[in-house]
Figure 1 (cartoon, rainbow, N blue to C red):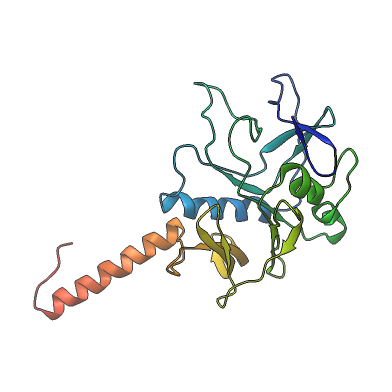
Figure 2: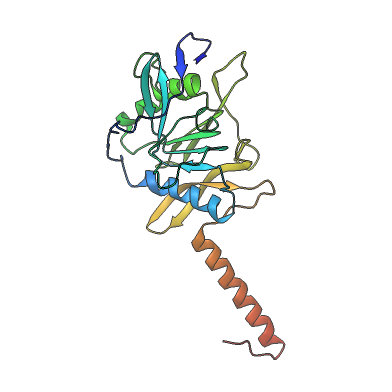
Length: 241
């Protein structure tokens, strides 16, 4: 059991197997595409290791004043996550019981402005708002809010135990944000992936190299092969087909 500075009781209990999760439709197609793209580049770079959980719209469970509270971030990243028994499908994640508090939680704002008030809600009573939940109950170190329609990115960093509140983080000179628990920079990129053209969230490593998507990796290898073929032909050697 945990008593936080605001004196409400928090316990960490696994979602009952008989609990029926609400099936709420997504606000728009962008949300799953943005989440999948962020996860894809991590996976291709070999950064989703054993014990790492990168999940979209997966229930995070906390028992708040003896009542179960569930929030489903558009994406979260957690480490030291215990594996599930064979053949068991993950339906939820309970931090502290099954692994670490997520290093980062993300919410992608839908295109309908009145529908995203909960992302900023500090409502403390049951059912608590997302802002209050992530800041005071879950105490996620980083809370990201991204508005893909205009490419607006806000990265909120949790303060010290003496001041455990979110503070807006300032970007670096490249307009990117360092995410300590992931070990990467996060920033906004504009372009096209599959059927969507617009603003995306992307990862960059410490050297400033952007983590690529699968299609970008294929294209890079194709261009590398074309350059090599041109060099061979310039040397009078016909490359093998």
